[in-house]
Image (cartoon, rainbow, N blue to C red; front, side):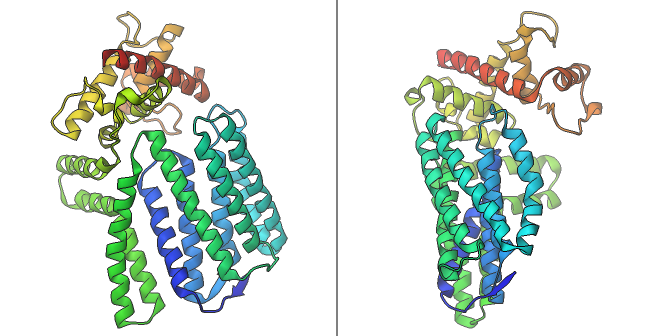
Length: 417
């Protein structure tokens, strides 16, 4: 279904296009492990696409606004705690139902009411999470924003025609921007990062580079197509500059040198995320959460370099990578303390479970639940552990063991510090 759109408020449209494109790309460039953050990033990019189609072709296509709504529903479902038993089932329903629902909406616009209803339910679910989650204020704010996203999406995708299309697009743009910023701040806080400097740095560099290109285009040509292309090029190349550099290095440098250069570059880019909060200010629950995150990043030195645990008194080093290596060694030493007093390298009794839960996935990088396990590259002990995880340990059980192990490791590190 296509609706003609008059040409006006081009500057407002370009602003929302540029800002949402940057914010969506920024969320994806963070390489967050959280699907909620990734899906929100893709939702912002989908909204930017809808704006680009409107600017270029002076038309509004309904399905382009269904995509952000459907992606946000998925993001909200991934905010459910992993311990929630209904979480996998609901997410599977979302995966299976999204595409057919989008197709049905093209046949009859009133099917969009089901999407709006799902958005309302997601807002209620997030509000309920705010009552029990450690991030009460954040989830309460997310619930309010989710309600506004629902209202804006409903005004656009339902055949009501209550407000002019440009105003509806602007309302949805504002809501999605606030949604993206809030989820960015939540993700950073959960990772123990300080997001402000990194976010402002990315925004200013994009504003400078993309603004210069847009100014050149506006001075020498009044073509909105050229302006949009230059804005897109400037924002994406600036935001994904590290990924582009990695690609160029992989094509021109030897593998060893490329890996070292990539580690240094990623660490330098991530340093603005390092929190300056002293470790003594963290309570037991916060310290355990940070330890859990550090364990999950054990094979990622740039991520470890921005972990607040590098500020522990026991961590020594003259530069960020040295301190990341020191933190990694400290965590591995604490993991080894969980190992039962035995000459065996692996066991399946209860006394082995916490050690197994963190040693094989984090220290050795074993991924028990991937569909394609490379048995040929594993030694005999790792193969036995992999078989045991896949046949005897449900994924939710492993997650619970890892949480308990992280608490024990956090206690050990805190005593040492």
